[in-house]
Image (cartoon, rainbow, N blue to C red; front, top):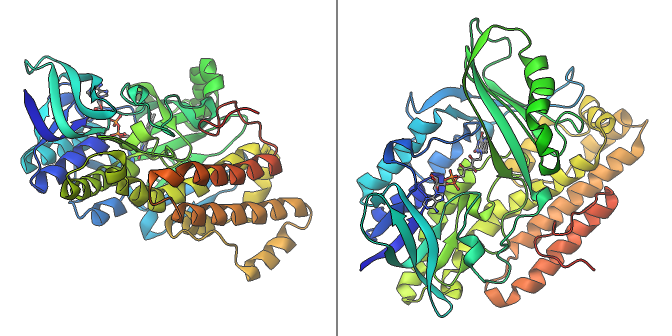
Length: 465
Ligand SMILES: Cc1cc2nc3c(=O)[nH]c(=O)nc-3n(C[C@H](O)[C@H](O)[C@H](O)COP(=O)(O)OP(=O)(O)OC[C@H]3O[C@@H](n4cnc5c(N)ncnc54)[C@H](O)[C@@H]3O)c2cc1C
């Protein structure tokens, strides 16, 4: 019988980082992935990652080859693309990575630190002893065992995790609501001539008609290559390729000579993270816990951060020599008070923007009712307040449609409120239900104000009255 301190399912960003830090601390760590070792990291992605996480985790930045381009900021375009707002600060700079090379670097770092990788090994189901998870049943082409045991299982197996569905812990959703994720398609194109758009910025296009429920992205890999994609609400999935061709490829590429290097589709959650990411003997990290920036679909940074926090929580549980949800609860506190708070606020922002028709989105950007600098502060420093002086000039600029500014001020107020509410994330599992009720009340206000139609399970498990 093979027994480990920590078993990590999935060697993506979350799993490999958890394995690296776990092994570095001297724990006996096993990292499983269904893929062959050399394919780990090969994933359909926009390939953009912020720089800051490497300093936060104190790990080396990607080297040349692992990254393809250095990005200085983000340009956000409303439906009328004659206007834009630019987000530029050191926190918003980043890399366009070679996804496979970067994924390989992460998994190799974990192995070098001492983690045992079992590739071509699928976790099939959880092994339980009463209500404690103590291991995983596996199917492997590389090892003979069919069962592995550990004090802690970290489920880092991505959006389509099968393990989360097997856990009966309150407030860990088994199913993700349709409104809480988007379906994406992307192509990597190589041009014959250098591309026209500024290749030091990534571009995001918001448009209710062309990308309903999501966005379009244009991420330059270098002056000859681009990662181009679209994410739209799941209910439009049958039209995904049609939307890509009509609203992304044709207007942005046209008849510019190029070849297609790669294409594919995938799902991205665009909502707040799971209410609760721990059960008895298990932690959910990365896409398996819906830890993705809901405005941009960026999940690499939050997944890496989650992998790091999971090991911090394990250290505490190990000292207590208890691996139940209560002993691992520190993971929730660490995550929800940092990225959880930011993502919940951005989730409100996303929901409100989705409720606005295209002409209002145009108006907001054209009249600078929200600037790139404000969005940047909102996402980097947690500031969700418009400056009084700027409100006056915004009132003048937005005088023809005063309700829009009032709606935005209301939205900022609710974003601030939800952030401070997340800073009061419960210290133990008992108070979670009450905390969730209060969170949902803030969501309901936004739904009402922006006349959004909630899908029946949109509020992660809230019962329909
Ligand atoms: C089209 C698209 C564009 C995106 N663009 C960006 C972007 O530009 N920037 C960004 O930051 N994020 C982006 N994301 C999101 C980002 O890719 C994810 O959030 C991130 O990769 C999540 O990392 P993870 O480690 O949680 O999961 P994953 O990277 O999905 O890794 C999960 C791993 O688990 C393995 N696995 C799955 N099931 C099992 C099992 N049962 N047993 C063993 N192994 C298993 C898989 O083989 C995989 O290696 C994008 C996503 C998509 C779909």
